[in-house]
Image (tube, rainbow, N blue to C red):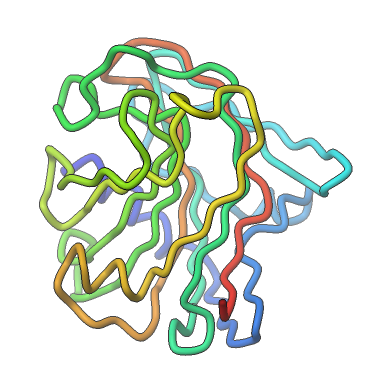
Length: 215
């Protein structure tokens, strides 16, 4: 089974939550929500997820050493109304020196998947994997070494921001057209993932304020 798309399987276990407001929050990162999130397939072990908060609200901390897993949520986002994904995240310990577009180095200290269901099985779906890269510049992108149906897209890089909170934004509808050549009007699920099972290194990262907006 393809690594990137195993994370997609977990959305089938989630309760669908349709959001069409000017701002569509994906994760609250509360104790109540945390109990409902499903862990995807474990790659040589499970990422350690812990909740925390600061002056800007709740966040989740992820730690992984030679292992990895994701947390996902099925949520229908209307990209005609809220096409922009907004992510606040931080990488405390990155994965310097790995070749991220290779199978042996396909790990990220932080990543956020956006998933579009395009068929009856998970493997038919398309995904954009927004990543906090440890080795590449912002704006770089490439197909996953495991499947061309998932594209890695660098939104942040520890070359510029290591152990610093960063807020980024991307137009998901435009990115699906640019990277996959398809016009999508909604997406079906969102997942976060911190994994180091290929590189055998250790990563520590944080996720906060993941939502969609009109602009």
